[in-house]
Length: 202
Image 1: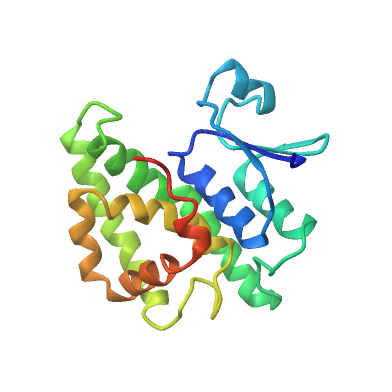
Image 2 (image 1 turned 60 degrees about the vertical axis):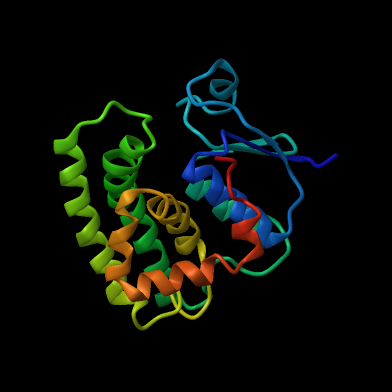
């Protein structure tokens, strides 16, 4: 039995980010699909949010902390650039994705389309406008770079992909066609076994 456990329901974009990182490193793990804000989840993360992570007796929460630990604690290909500038760009993108992209695309668009929130058309319309601005910023990088922080995929790409995967399943998927660099990046990500193998059941 593996001494690594990931906690959190598979539909979470952040759980998928952690699963991609584990797969990229070739780490065997047990996945316990706890729902957020349940007693089970609160036992491993006092905020009740997903995911949480356990390696032996070491328990960790917050996805960036988890993925950094996965990268540093296990053998396998590096998930972060060695170059200081590229690593700084990676961290800049992760911060941007967590602070802005997740909020706009997930909370203001995707959750309405998946009927996980009661529809609020005004919020959705505002979320679409924000999403277009964010896709344009991503396009400025991905029109000339294969990945967000250089020529190889990094943690930044693993944070972004699960969000855009959901965007590709809803009517707003039509937006992606206006951003060919983003669309090509999405296709590159979908060629990875770590990405296809982490797809949640829908």
